[in-house]
Image (cartoon, rainbow, N blue to C red; front, side, top):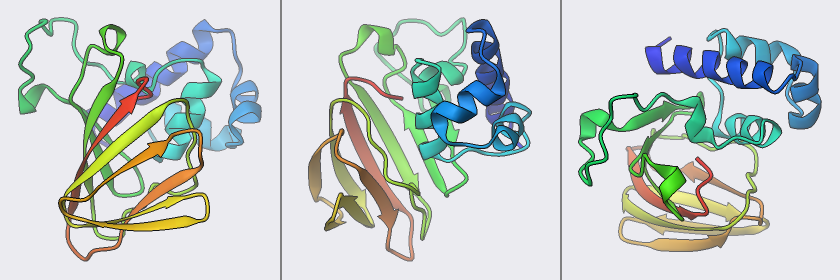
Length: 185
């Protein structure tokens, strides 16, 4: 398990405990099992993005709070590739946060890499609107019952409160950029 996942699990536990919540409280709100939550907190399981969204809602905390962006990170308008906050899900998706100071931003920008067959899993809902552009590859975007097949150069705009999920239906890496307002990561 990499260092970012270990740090994320510890941060989730710290936030939960600071809010006076027990594992069973978070399990009840998220629909996840206490066992899975414990494994996430103890860095024995790599959560899916669906699980991270559910945990962030239950803790009333943005997902970005679960990741250490470094105390010494300066406020330069330039964000180097090596400085990006990275989240790797169990579903084969890497999320790179391109807007690290979310408290100052009305939106967030994510660069995403979907391994062949990678899928966000269950349908996701959150507040706001999001726009995604496929840079390379082929992505299936389901919004409720509607299925949209997007190729490199295509984009989509989604009301984020509509249940949606994404899947790489290519046999190669699919890369995307997602812009969400308000920030949910």
